Image (tube, rainbow, N blue to C red; front, side):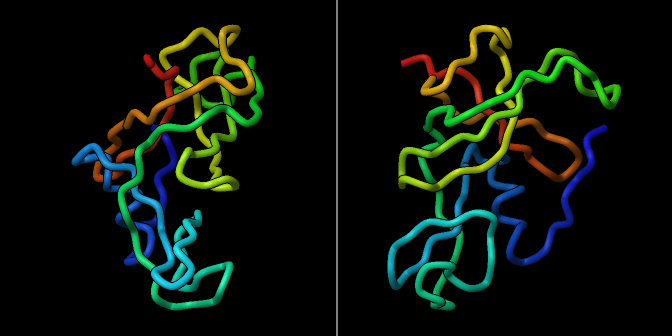
Length: 132
């Protein structure tokens, strides 16, 4: 089993959006910047007018590594750990896995789209090669 995140008022929308097929990122109502991880204050302008909004779930692989050591039983080796930058905003990045794609086929700049893995009441956002 994957280690699951603690769900609270700020993080719950991110970790449960997959139930309805939505990747949700926090965005500031004042400066309109997205940010991740979720927080009660905007990192750019310090506004408290922030909240989760759905994003496209499309992005590109900024960088990645292929891990050939399965550190836990649920991680089949090899597996790809990547930093994905979402198309909504330059710098809107987060760490995830690339799935449904041979590890050797992953490349920097590769277009990806979000898919979700359900574990109990958490929907983990993962990425696969975009089809178009």
